[in-house]
Image 1: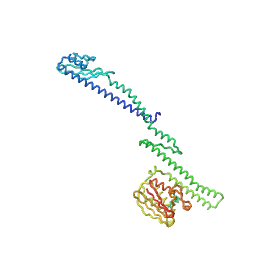
Image 2: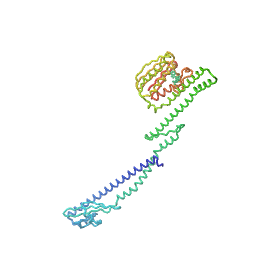
Image 3: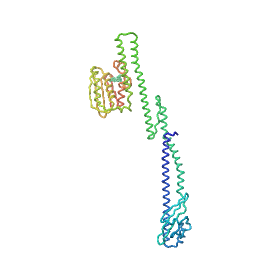
Image 4: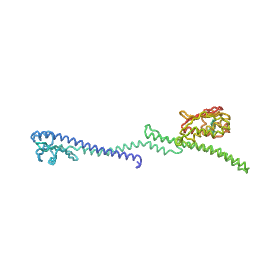
Length: 441
Ligand code: ADP
């Protein structure tokens, strides 16, 4: 057992408190026992003294009275003007004259083994004397009890410490388990979780919190791994284009406009890389745990209008009819950047995948929840592809999209952002008829 371990500290405090309680209890017990025995003896002697006084004052001959006392097993002596005038035969008290100077007083003589009570009663007129009544030598049970307590306390303390140590060991089992699991966890191994105890207590809460933490860490690391593999996979194409372009250009001396064209191609690819990395980073930046810290008071209608403004020119260019069916002023706590990403990606897709002269209808309203609905009359999404289109880098049939630029990240970002706000997104679509995307927050 380490000197500084939790177990040692708990045992130390437990032992200290138990010892203090036991000692205090013993003192109180000793005091109360002493008081009770003393009071009992005092009452008994007082009663005897009163009985004898009655007889003496009834003017019975003093020898007769003392004789009767012996028969009753009383120990008494009678003094008059400081002189002993009679005593029962079994009266044993050294120096009774000393006590005869007291009046109406109880004295308890205590030795280690015996107790002896003495009661001095002033006899009233006409006798005018002192009556001393004593007990036999009574076994000193108080001291016996003190001795018993003195041996019992250390034994009790040791038993308590032993039981306490076993109990702490039992309590610390899950903590040791947690330590072991935590030591085994590495970036490549998140397999360990701790079995949750049945009892609803602090240990269960700790184990659950720890298991949750493992799950969150695993999610974080999975996210990073996915990000790494996505980036390395998706960077390959534009980097190959850039490399090929440079190699071809450098093969021979070229005219200035050929260099310009080549650099433009490289610049375009670099821009694409930048855009993609930005989007990928956005997907890993926020998590359910940190998102609420970024929440602000957002005017959703204002964010939607300013996003629509950005797409006004593209919409007009394609001669699309952008209709706002419903637009309610809505204020809510949210991440404004992610909200704007939701709107812009969905509007961008609707414009991209809808042929000229068609309609796009937008609604934003609130009932118990906030609803954003965007409906287009575009090329639509085949039913069997619907479940995949929110996956990263997934694009429905590259050939039909050939002329339409994109990485297949937009819907993934939208889905992620909606879920971070505790919302849901549903997509209803039919090929060549159009798509309706409904976001509920
Ligand atoms: P991107 O548009 O960059 O390719 P998204 O993740 O936004 O990536 O969309 C994934 C795929 O889903 C798109 O490639 C497209 O095939 C399909 N899609 C998305 N929105 C629509 C839409 N409004 N109409 C038809 N197809 C769509």
